[in-house]
Image (cartoon, rainbow, N blue to C red; front, side, top):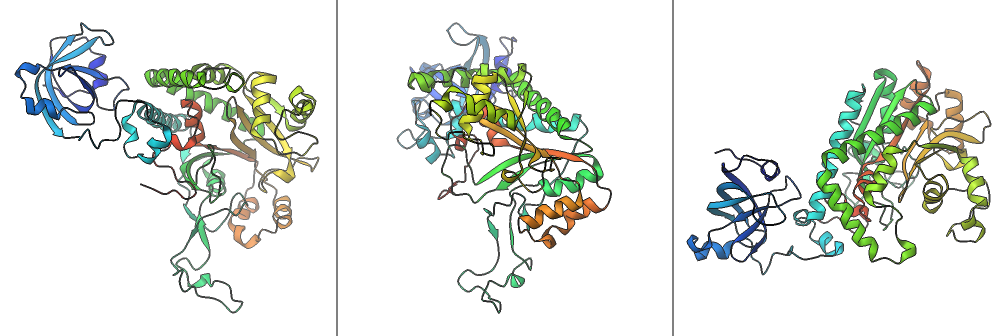
Length: 477
């Protein structure tokens, strides 16, 4: 007898074969019908128990959440909702689940309640679907880059540099907080610390990835990053995963080509491999939208949104053109935007980005050539010396999903930008070396993995697309 998954059995037409299956009980009704799930698919398989010849003690132990092993015969189902079912010949309770204590009952639970039970929420249809899609997207990312000649690069998690220049970093130290060593100036003496200097958890692997791209040609990181930003929003996490490709000899146009092709590829792959999960989440989102006021409802279903990205060419628009569009649009003139656009140089908000995508161009948008003073030091300065070769990819429902740039490859310009921002040149000596020895134009971008999962699943809160969210005042599990 071959052990198979429920996904395999539901796609089988080998009726009357003897099967063995293990999983968790979702429901047990009429002392006869078990809805069993093993995580391989969002669908359950119905197992029909001969209750008259099954000990009553065993029947009492078949409760929601219990782990069971079932042997029986795969037969064509006579009931509605499934094509096959198992006629049970033998059942073994592997692990009991007390129905008085088990919190994930077969009813609707709020996402807040499920976050409090994050160790068990994966047993719901919604979260099992989200996490299967997350796993598929992860594989699709590695598949895409491998097939396109990229090498996976593991950036350090502990770093002495702040790639973003924001300063919102988690400090790494072995010094006793109750008795910190001080130097002559009365400041913490980090020479006594484990690494002999001040170190933090990384906010980005980009700078290190650049150094490897300048030898291997095409590299990408896919690892954890950390931001100590005190933001309790539906879009922010303190610990999240970043995908960061860096490519030698690529200019900004090449970078935009890569970002568009990459995103379309991984979403297309996931749509193909996770049809049942996407369909379930599409229906879930449609029902959720019906509960909102009409003016807050999305104009597109989840599937429509995903196909909108896959099937449309991304419109490329300069920041300057976008500002003109926004400044003259009806919502801005009628003061409908929460953040009015009055002048060139404004940092665009999600509401502006979504207007460009959903209302004006009606396709995904790539904005480029941003004002230099609102972007990071490593972005290449344009000849006008006011803008940099930056790009952001904007999606419906979410706004910015990718941020990238052509990197500043000229040593003298990069040193001037570092000095203007009061960054210690000594901290970035190794980064500057790549501009001394064989410098060349190169580009890359960053994509927050959870932001991509959020878009692909239609989940409204980023805390619901990562197994155990880390946010301000929350490090449970």
